[in-house]
Length: 331
Image (tube, rainbow, N blue to C red; front, side):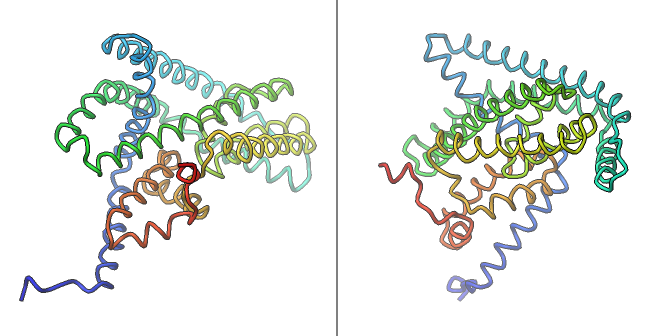
């Protein structure tokens, strides 16, 4: 009798939703350590192809690892050092920044500036630096270990294992997406810095770096990146300067997102627009700031996982875009 017992389908769905809810709560309460760990894993996966590229260029594995790790260390140290210096200067400069106008818009602008000033974690700068160092060295160790991890998985599960093949295909898709995303964001960030320098906007390089980083957050990242330079332009050139700066960000964002990025990828995220937008905030709530950056790939992982089971395939279909991948059509 016990062997013949089956959980009713509606109860299965309730259990699945409850498990997902509990999992998100668990991530919420472990976000301080889970977020940086997940970020370091994603960064390592993105950097790994560079190591393989060096091997194809004729370098031995050990030498390729050394070059990759030295490059990561140098780049990471340079970025952390630049941020420490730039943020220290910014903290000193922002309190003197104000919009000199009696209009009600200027009042709101000054309130936004005051909010940004109060949100800068002056007292926790050591914590931010230590977290950056932790992520940096986690990436270094993971990049060194990834080839061994790959070989262990193949040895344990077999090279023809469908689940393993699906996982490697998913990782390759992640790498392709992030590499192209990084190229577009780099073009975007350099362009922003150049225009801001041309207009004499303070901290132009910092705003360009901010644009590059926040560009990884779909839909809302560029809007957030535009706020500081628009406020600086408002304080320096008046409301007309803010409008021009805002229009500049709209134009360059439209070009990058509607033309350059789709042309390079040749396909979309295979997720509905609402799911992409909502996933940014859901993962941001669960994992903190890190969740905003890796929310989309984590959602893609969940969709692939849900597609593997009959009981959850309906959730994967609901979260998908409903459109066939362009790359599959070409095949």
